[in-house]
Image (cartoon, rainbow over all chains, first blue to last red; front, side, top):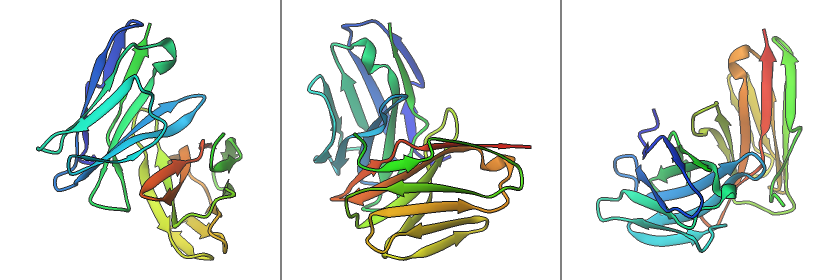
Amino acid sequence: DSGVTQTPKHLITATGQRVTLRCSPRSGDLSVYWYQQSLDQGLQFLIQYYNGEERAKGNILERFSAQQFPDLHSELNLSSLELGDSALYFCASSAGVGEQFFGPGTRLTVL
Amino acid sequence: TQLLEQSPQFLSIQEGENLTVYCNSSSVFSSLQWYRQEPGEGPVLLVTVVTGGEVKKLKRLTFQFGDARKDSSLHITAAQPGDTGLYLCAGVSDYKLSFGAGTTVTVRA
């Protein structure tokens, strides 16, 4: 158990819909990272937040957005969903630069 | 295109054999990490290598960072079925991790 929790574990929705994925980091970790893992693209970095502020951006689509709240939990919002958005979405947290602890992931299926 | 290229993509060996996974890039990284991921779970960090030429050992696993800090290898001695999983290398640069596509290792009993 990494100490990072993600909800929901599974999500099935339709194209065009909007979903919100939630992540609670390890106690004390200020940084939260979001990743997308698909069979053809591997694990892709989406975005990082540090203590509520956006720190780094990766291959995140404009249809996707994230935020980190004062209690340090984070949410990833995915809108206008397409079939190709079906993937595993991981959240990770860290105390600083270094080891990232990954949550169990949310499996999103867009039908 | 992946910033980090891992090879081979798949590896299936018999218990007791040795294996090596390679991670190559044209970019220089401040450090490189190796993760192992099991089905249905998130990646778990195995090791971080920081210095060019560094070699780290973790029981039967040996990790090496290239002198130029662009490539790395993971060697497993006397592999066991419990070593089965997806092995991912990740380069650290500007606070971001760039992952390779991974090597799926299957160790048959």
